[in-house]
Every structure is written in structure tokens, then in C-alpha cells.
Length: 95
Length: 495
Image (cartoon, rainbow over all chains, first blue to last red; front, side):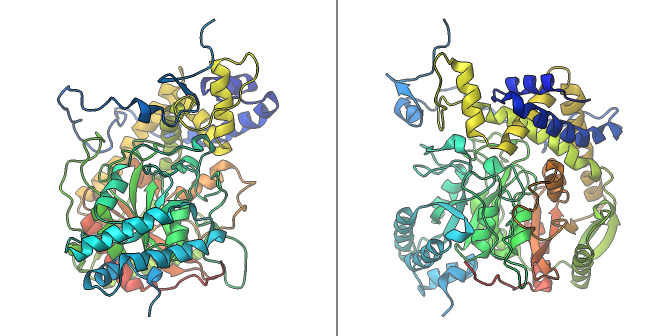
């Protein structure tokens, strides 16, 4: 599997990271090196092996479905780069 | 009189309890060292006022006869831990200015036990790195140097600031986190002890997430006894982390007898890598002999899927990172890029993340995005998770056959020079974790113990890997190894 410039640009887009066009060839090359390393996994016979979902076998705990937290608007917004009138502010999302 | 900052946790605790010193004196001694050690790049946010306030409170508790294990002991805290009101930015530009409104469970537990925080410690950005060179604060520097050579060396990573601070006696101990070796490799590079406990032993709540199925917090200390004391204070069930184990935390220190007679120590054939330096071979053989002399039975074992641990890790960890780091979007906290005319929300995300994330983090987020993307999920991510199951099965089989602990080198070399790997392929840097990453994939406890030096006088460490939840037994074996090795060297102060 090899990653060309178009695919590298698509990955950057999916990851929401702006990559300048002149940086794409180096990026694609790095991806290919790393994926080349990962390709070793194809040597392993994984027939009949379930993908690991939990590293230690444990049942996830359940709790009462009740409100246990909240009403902390000021704290939630305290670190926002732009907060107005009790909301996070962002650039225009819809035209 | 011994300088107070050079004490171990156990020594300082005993002096506090007997009234020989106060926490304020201990804390002032450490703060003075921290002030003079900027060349190490270890402390990146100093909190002297908070430290002295905590120290006074600890002294009052001790006077009142309420002195839990960590009471009054000055620590450094890795920047990955959210600490209330104190900058916590995972060494990333994208969390510039972030001051959490809450406290991580692990630091809260330490503070409840009376510990004092001197400040936040340098690390690789989002804990992604093995040399502390990806930090937005600049490099942390190893207090150790090669004999007769002033080349600046890496303290390892990602917990490089923690390792440098403890090795240089800036603090009595520090917190670290370990996703692929980030406690054990820097501990080995700086001649200190570092334990990554069983996955689930310490709560991950409030620790900036890198790869959630691999991340664990642990102590970085001057001795095995200190590791036992501090792990006891950090560990325990937390309802806020659904993967934290609801199991009692044993008194780890009380289990340190040094008696390992009859214990079975496995020596895995697959860890004898091609091209392994003779010094590492010898260190490993010497450590094996020490455990044998202490009465342990040495057994050759095989962990056949070891070779595939690093490639599996470099699928799973970036995949989880790409998901965890999606939250850094310039909306709720940290950095937001300044926008051009007409830029919408997508441009805001893309510019913010391009400016805020360093190169290695960007690379891993994008690799993770790729291996999770439609059409590749099965080929990469699911295959890696199946290989991970096989890696864990290797360990399960060995433990089921009666092996109590496994002895391996901690790192493939001693500390290397800062900048030395700059031109290397990223995969070369990843090889630093070759002996440690299997342990994260299998969720096991692992500890790095300094046992020798290389020809240029740099410390080298061995790793012991234990059964899940048996940190007490693992620490005891590490204690026996530490006693036998008698490693007491300290770096010469140059900073």
C-alpha cells in the first residue's frame, strides 16, 4: 500500500490539519515509511483470534442513571478562547 | 548534614515523623535546587507559593499526628496531569494558557496524602516521543553526561522532565505516565526507578489522554522502596474512570522483604535482539546472575510475538490518539488560530490544529486517521488488535506455566545525544521502546531498575515484568535486584 499526494492530502483533511501543498511530498514519504513498518503485521497468522477490546477482562461498571454533576457554566467556559453570553463562540457555521 | 533535597521519600518521611525536619524546610531545599536548574529544562511551570502553602499544611498535619505516607514530601508533577488552577498543557502549544478547573484523581490522591507540588515537569508533546525533544517548552536535559564529554544527552521520554528532576535531586520523586515505555525508558536513562503499574491500577481521570487502552500513571523515584510508597498513594479505584480496577491496594512497602527464594524468573529469547550492544548483553546476564544468587530459579522462556509489538503499537496508539486529540479544535480551551477574512469553522479547525500541534503529534494523528479510515480499518486497526491479543496470550501462557516475573533490558542503549536522532527515520526513534511496549499492549506491570553503567559512565537499567495486579511481588523482586546491584552513582552537577 503506498500513499500518494492525493491520499496524503485527504488524510490531512480528515484529520482537520492544514498541510501546505509543498509539505505534502515529505508527509507522504513519512506515511509510507511508517506504513512499511506496520506491514510486518501481515506476517502474523491471526486466524480465529478475536481483536482485543479490553486489556484486562472486566465488566464495565454501571451506575444509577441520575444527574450527578452540572450547573457549572462559568467553569466550563473559563478556558474558552472565545465565549459570549454563556456560550462558546465560533465562526459562522451555516450561511 | 545531608542536603534535604537528596533524601529519598522513605528517609524524608521518617525525618518528618520524628520531627528532625519540617516539610517547609524540605520544600525550601528543593525549591532552591529547582531555581538553580533551569539548564535542565525539567520544571516548566513552577509553583513555589502553592508548594510552601501545602508544606505548611502538611507540617500542621504531622504535628497533629495525622501523617499519611506522602505527607510533606515535595514532588514534581508531569505536565500531562491536570492540576487545578495550574497550567497543564501536555507540553503542547495547543493547550497554551489552559488552567484546569479540576484536579486529576492521581494528583488529588497524592495531595490528600499530604504531598507537596513543586511544579509541572517537561515531557514530550502529548507524551509522544522517546527523547523529550517534541516538547513546546524545549528539551529537557539529562543531568548525566558521558565521562569527559559535555555533549547534552536526552533524559529519555516522554517523562523526560520527571526523570531529569528526580535524578538531579530537584524533587524527592515525580509522577510519570507510560503508554509505550514513557516511565521506564527515561528512568533507565537517568539511573532512577520507574514503575508502570497494571492497566487499571491508577485512575486515568484528569490525565490528558494519549492512547486510552495503553496509558497508565506511575511513580518515578530514587529507590524501589520509594516506588512502593508512592504507588500506594497514587493507586486505587475511581468511579470516574470506568477502566480503573475495583481492587484493594496492598501495602506495597510492607511486602519488600527482598526474599525471592523459589521465585521463577523468565528470560525471554526474543528480547536478545540482533546487534544488541555487548554492554546491554552483559548488564542482562549480570542481572540474571544476581537474581539467581538471591535464590530465584532462572528459566528460559519464549514470547513468540514480541517482534510484532512495535508495529501493532504504531497502529493502535496513533488510532487512539487521533480520536482522543480530536477534542483540540480551538473551541473549548487552549489555542485558536487567528482567522483570515471569510474563514469558516473548518478553516478554524485546520489552522488551529496545524499551529497548535507539533510535527510528531500531527504525524501520529494523521497515521491514526488513516488506519481508522474506511477501507483500512480491518487491514490495519483490527489486525493490530488481533496481534495484540496474541502478544497478551504469550505472556498469559508464560505466567500460567509458573513464571513469576520476566527480566529484560529496559532500553537498547544508554541515553543518546539531544539532536542525534533528528535526521533519523521516525521508526528509528520508535525502536527505543522495543523492550517496554509489549508490557503496555498486554496491560502488565513493569519496572525499570538501574543496575549498572556503560563504558562512558552512563546509567543502564533492567526491566522486570510482573503478573497483572501483582505489583507487590514485582516490587519485591525489583527490591532484591536493587540490593544486589547496589547502584549508587549520581550525576556530577554541571547545571
